[in-house]
Image (cartoon, rainbow, N blue to C red; front, side, top):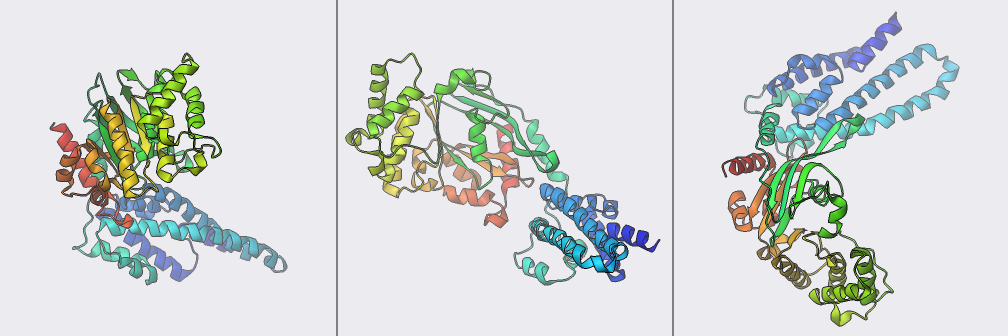
Length: 455
């Protein structure tokens, strides 16, 4: 009977020790106060594991909450096993079994602490508390005293209640799609999802609707994890989303095989043989990139044209391994440009280049856009070449860590919209606080949605 009581107490309170039970009760009360203040149901605090998940949800850390709840369950099991070992395992065998239990316990402790910390960070941001609270949280035991401070202090109010922001974001879905352009690129992306923890649905991107005219060069901005590469992969058909992508009147997804030559995608790294000459490299890729009905003469002519466009003719007989960083970048771009694509996408083409070489590269891309193509570029040094761009797309992570559209329009209008002159400062506005940003992503996502709705 005593063992059964200890097991039940161990599962519910994570301990059968009297003092620990009192602490757990105080934690439950603190949780109830926090849940109520955050707009959730206070009685959820009475339900082990679900309580931890709901607290994380209130702190805008829902995905972390799922993991943390499982870790809490594992911790309760480990503690309960400890009680069972004391009662059931003979003393002479206990030393052999105890190390196994100890290893299991430590396997839970580290991730338990990490996810606990991440949820605390969510609450700190929610209540606008300074970074000094990290020190307070680290050294105060028990840590739920901080929760009492936030819950009972009338001056500490959450920026928004748990479901308020979600309801606001749901309005974005109702804004509808943009009209399809006959010429240019139209993207109506409803959602891009992935399987998360325990096969849960994790939103990577949501409600991104925009239309880019032919001949425009577009800068794609966003902080780390905002979904820039995921967005580009959805646009070029590499990773399909719940979306309609129309390029020059053709559906990217339904006609993907027929549109391979319409898109040029230049990744950050390009694999080329260093011991081949430039001209051999371009001509070899021309054989792969161009349609099979092209003759050898036509392929070679196109290779020569592309080398001339990107300033590679003077070094056509040089070995790839002897080229400068800027020449290597231009060569990798030239290879993708062989098929004369309508849409040209480049992921950090200027990485590793100094200002002069980067400028030269982007001026060549500007000429590509001026020839009637759409050029979309990700760069981490946008301000040195921003004058060459027509438009800017800004993606931002909302509080649920979903990538959304925070702005699309001209560069000059972007400066007015974000009240910042530099593109890097715009990114800082939408970055999360823990990333060194201003944490205003939600505000600008909703602000842009209102602007887009009003035309």
